[in-house]
Length: 421
Image (cartoon, rainbow, N blue to C red):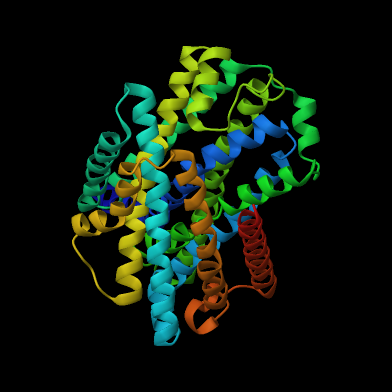
């Protein structure tokens, strides 16, 4: 009897000890959803062109951009954890009404520009894989993205798992292509980690890579994904959750960085110095892989592009919902929301505008949105009355301000170059 009485509390004590660990692990996953935006079709076009034109020269730009992305997304996730609110809601509660309306208006334009790139990318993927014309392919993309978004009704985990699966397809596609292409030079890649340029073309392309890296809509979304988690009990659990978020961001954004780097390396090995047969388009890249590497590599590239378009499309719509609900405190049915944001993309595709031109224009529009998300994030995360014990250290705020200034500056320079061109 005494043995049974003595032994019975042990499982309860063990469960109590494990409960904080399980609660902390609920914060693992949001960064992998955010990572999808860093491997969207716009990144495909930019990275492939960088490798094809300049070999490994701009590898250091990709690595630097990935490090900045890790920092920004970690700051967004930490803000959601500390406040229990997403960034648009915090902006609405912090800034004056005219400022909030301005932030909302530009965020909606960003959401539409995001859909533009992602729908075009997925439609190109379907066209390359199955020969489906662009407009029907875009409509199929809309249906599939609705199905992905419907998973939210079952909780955040099913949606995140679906996105992680598609992210895995993208990673596998480029891993296969990287191995099939071969011809990688470790010394050339190492030399590409040393900051250098080769003329104005490489400078503009490097700025384009940076401009396409930090997606403003995902800064809003990451804070929301974290804020939706159960609230940690006390400072100890908050610190444990913060460590999980830090690991999540490092792994998720690190994976996205490796995929981007593999895009550049594959293009460098296959197209750089190959005689100028690559025209810079995604369709041209697919044909080049088929001719120079083989049908398997071309298939893997098209599948990765399709997975990129589908996954980033779902994430983009989720971000749009967060934006409207946060800035305006209004929520509309997801079907209506999806129809509104995808309408410009379907119209552009239906008019027959060249897909690569659409991708380029969408990145230009997105460049405008970056400072409008980064600057409020830095301003809010430095306030102790909002962040509590997770408030930024002075050095964190300084790094955030420098990152915001640099990214804003290089994107405006890119826009200036495009206008002059």
